[in-house]
Length: 113
Length: 113
Image 1: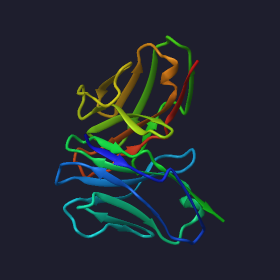
Image 2: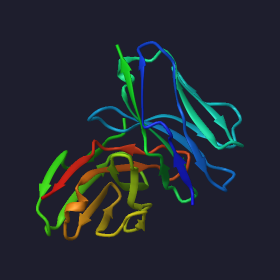
Image 3: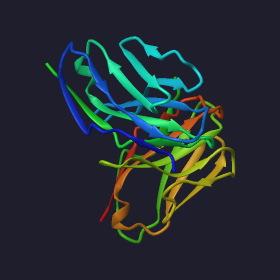
């Protein structure tokens, strides 16, 4: 069975620091997609960044970047220069062949002023 | 911007009632999804639909049914609500391609008393 594991239930950092959220997954597929989603308190789930497994280059979106290690089945999210608005639940997700997303349990990230 | 609208943010129902949760998207997305979100469990897929009148069971379909009579609308039905169905319900939609992100509604927090 395909699984996604986020080993950090909660993290907190000071504003402007860099933080890395970990995610590992298990699959026998060779071509797949990985996503990080963000869910701010009482707000909508939104896409942060996505990675295609066949691409070697790590995806980057402004302050957000990933470290994709395909052999290790690892997909961590790095947030640089963290801001108060980054406080949210972060979910890692894996897209399987039938359009279903397999989700991790989430990491609660708190940015302290 | 993509708009996914869920009919209610908060809903309180009684055990045994038939409950309808409605979801409408305005981006002509082929795929629509219903998830249940519980703390520590991430998102779990209840049902999804890849076309009008088509539906596929997700990981936890028991006690639920769905209806997709029009492309833009996907309804989740709790046939006979039970207290263990108290949860946050999220609707999402996406284009058919696997690399396309899912877009979420605001969620419905459902309490069954």
